[in-house]
Length: 261
Image 1: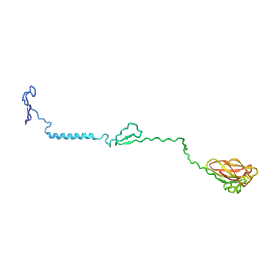
Image 2 (image 1 turned 30 degrees about the vertical axis):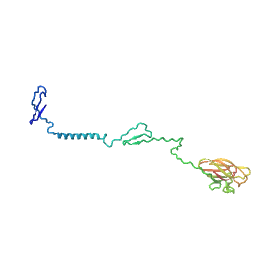
Image 3 (image 1 turned 90 degrees about the vertical axis):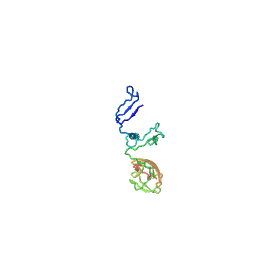
């Protein structure tokens, strides 16, 4: 057993039992050692307090490394987006945002069917106006103030005629012109002519000119100049204003009371 005895000097004695230091060390020898100076003046209380401080500092460093957010540190970290595996065009496909709440993806709509057939297009710069409504048939009296009488033609009385008057002495230079016959659109129209023909020889001819296009028309007689008759014919009118003339350069013509177009 080793017995230690602390001395007041800078050395202390060490008494060793036989054979403790190995062969040749002798027994009960006395050796001198210098006093250790590394922890000179440190007590157990001071060492305990220093260890506690170092432990607290180490704990703060560890906590800061764990709690510090990753990234650049400017603002909140970007929300995590969880990819969806599977079809994304169905109504059940959703996307998970950073808040953990699913937001429904828009359901694709089927394209609208294209209209069939051709579509009429208006040329660039052309204006498209609505189609004009057809005008109702209108009566034009032979003795109206706007008509033109020439070559000796005159208005005369006719009790049975529409307005009680007619135009006489037509043909052989005498003419009657209706200068303002209206049409809503160009095309063929039916024209009714109210006339009297009292010649007992069988009838008379007249030339009907529509916008200077001549047509020879036969008017049958009934032997009574005061009994009006009517016939119809097809005329081609332009849109708007037209001129219609009655004449017979070669012979006499029937009396004309009115036309209806």
